[in-house]
Image 1 (cartoon, one colour):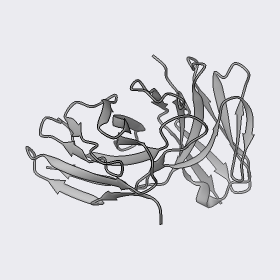
Image 2 (cartoon, one colour):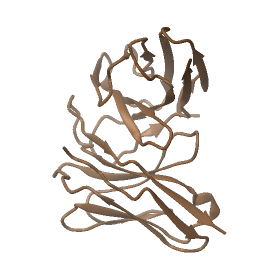
Image 3 (tube, helix red, strand yellow):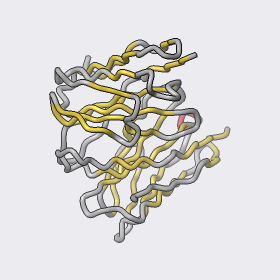
Image 4 (tube, helix red, strand yellow):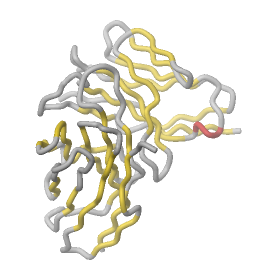
Length: 114
Length: 114
């Protein structure tokens, strides 16, 4: 059974770069990797999505090695407001049928300290 | 003002009662999802629907039921058969498939059953 594994928690300081890695050894050819951010008592919010190599947007970068068995979310220069839980999702997003696969990690609780 | 809404934010029920959680979206998305989140846990998929009048069980569908009579609406009923219904329930929507996409989440409903 496919599974995604990520660290339970991480600590950092303001201004540092934070890298959170997700392991997904059984990822399939059609699967994409997506990362979400969640604050307490709110719905998750999309951060970034990728299939392979590197993707960058205005808030984060996503690094995916050639074998795609892991992915690393990189948050540059974190601030106190980045304290949240970060989830990795493996998803066959091209599947329009009735056997969708949505494999969520258990989340990484990031604490950014002053 | 496009988005996804869930109501109510907090819901209290007595054990043995069925309760229906509302989820509405005006994003013109075909796909909708219901998740359950327990304290310190990740997201677990209850049901999803790729298109109107069709829906599929997720990983933990027992004790829940859904309907998808309209594109905009995907209500979730927590039945008395659900053994541990107290949780934070999240609804999401997305385009059906293909390309890069994200799930848009509602603010969640916190259900307490005593």
